[in-house]
Structures are given as structure tokens and as C-alpha cells.
Image 1 (cartoon, helix red, strand yellow):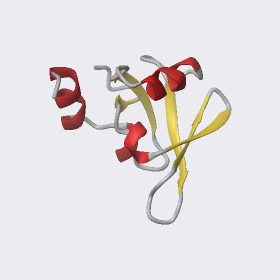
Image 2 (cartoon, rainbow, N blue to C red):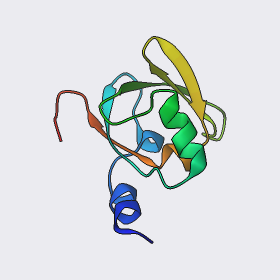
Image 3 (cartoon, one colour):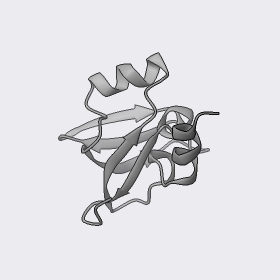
Length: 89
């Protein structure tokens, strides 16, 4: 496992957000082509996201960003490390 992947797994990720708070993407594990496609949609470092909802069982997860909604599989959401908005990083 790469150092970046290990570090992201220890940090808060899109898969572990709490409803009602805004977060900023800090790091992205872009090795997977699926993740690269999500980055084209705006899931990049510095983007502000908010948990909108999750399906029963927690997968997929819906996020709001730039006034739009996007749903991700939990396995993909774990590839985006975040911090709470306003905390820096």
C-alpha cells in the first residue's frame, strides 16, 4: 500500500462526514481511473463539500458541492481526505 493511501485511510474522508457541516477536500488518491473521472466533475483539492444523505446501509453516499448533488460509492469516497471547513490543513 502506498504512503498516500495509508495516510488517507487514517484521515477523515468523504465516507466519514457528519451531516450539517461543510468540509474541504485536502488530498485525493488519484491512482484509480474512477477517481480521476470524479476529479473531472469537481472533486478536487480545495473543493467544499457537504453530506446530503446516504442510502440505507450507507452506500451510496450523496454529497452537495457547487450547488449540485453527486452520489459516490463508499469505496470511492474513502479516497478523498477532508478537513472541516474553516480548520485549514
